[in-house]
Length: 527
Image (cartoon, rainbow, N blue to C red; front, side):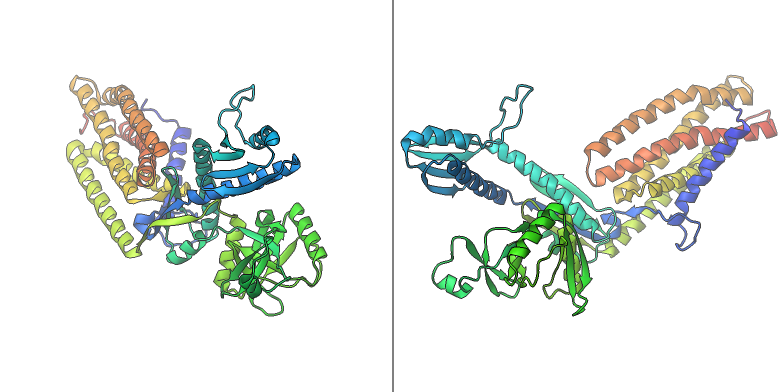
C-alpha cells in the first residue's frame, strides 16, 4: 500500500496541479491570458443584490378560466343550435339559461363534453373534472373544480418560474436563485443587481402582447358618451391617450420567436424589431393585407404601445414597434417579449435590497473565521504529530485549494453557509488524519517496524474513514436535493469537501509519507 508507481505519482501530481490551476483565478487578478475565466460566484449574502418574494395572482387565473369557459360554452351551444339566454361569468364558473326545456339534456351533454378530464388509467376513465354541473329551473350552473384549479395554480407557478428565469437571464446577471415557496409563491434572489427597480419593472408586467385593429367607426370620446360597441373596448396608452380597439385579436404575442432592441434607420430613435413564427407570419400578412390604410393597435397588458397605420402589407413575418421608448425601455420590452407572457400577474409581497457593503462585511467575517479555524487546526496537528502533522497540514491546505478549484469549475454560488461548510470540512479532513495517525501509533506501540506500522495504520483505518464520510455525504446530498437557498449552498461545499478530504487525507498524505519512508528508511517513527 505504500508503493506508488511512477504513473500513479504523475497522475496524482496532475490532479493536484489542476486543482490549484482552477483555483488560481480566485486569488490572482484577472486579465492573464492562460488562466481560466471561471471563478466562484458569490451569493446574495456575500455580493449584495435584490431579494423578492412574489405571489402568483390565483384570482386572475380563476377569472380567466371562468371567462374561457363562457366562451367555450357559447361556441358549443351555437354548434348544437341550442337557444340560450343569460350566459355570464360567475366568481368561480359560469351560468346559462336554456330557453327550451326539451333541449336541456342536450345542453348539459354539450357543456359536459368541454371537461378537460385527465386520464386516470389505460381505460381513459375520468379522474378529475375541470368543473361540475347543476341544473335548476332550466338554469345550468357550471362550478370550477377546486382540485383542478389547484393543479392550474401549480402549473402557473412552474411556468412563471421558467419565464422569470428567461427574463432575468436577459439582464446578464449570474446565478439568480428562483425557487418555489408553498403553493403560489416564488422566492427570487439576484446577486449583484444594483438596479432593483428595473427588476421589479420586468416582473411587474404580465407581457401579454397582441395585435388588434383600431375601431374607427366612432371616436373613443363618443363611444364613452354613448355606448361602447360590444365588439370593442376602450384602452389607453402610457400618456393617457384613449383608443377604441377591437376585442378580436389578429395575432397573439405567443407567435413571436424573437424580439430585439434596435434603432430606427430614419429617426434614429429606439425601437423593438420582432419576428413571428411561420403561422404567425401568415396571420400577420393576411391581417395587414386586408387592412391597408387602417390603424392597428399593438397592445401589451391592455395598454396600447402604439397604433400605427398600415401603409402596405407586411409579408415578411417581421415588423417594428415604435413607442417613443428610451434605450432602456426598448431593451426591457425586447426582454419581456423574448421571455414570453406570464400566465398570471405577480404581486411583490416582500422586498429586500442587500448592499455590497454588507456583503463585504460577511466575506471578511467568513475569511477571519476560516483563517482562525485553519491556523488553530494547523498548530494543533503539528503539536500532536510532529513531522506527520506537517504532512497532514500540506494535504489540508491542498484540500481547501481543491475545494475552491472545483467550486470555480462548477460555477457554483458561494454563500455564507457555504463558507461554514468549508470550515467544517477543515475539521473533518483533520479528523481523518487523526484516525490514521492514531492507528499508526497503536501499531508502532505493538512492536512493529515503521514500514509495517504505517502500512497497517492506513489499511485498517480505511474502512472507518470511508464509512464516516459516506454517511456524511449521504446527509449532505439529502440537504442539497431537499434544501433551498443557504441550506443548498452549505450542502454543495460540504459534499465537495468530503470527497477532497478523503482524497487528500488518505492518498496525498500517504504518498508524502511513503516517499519519506522509502528515502530516509527511519528506524523510529517521529509520531
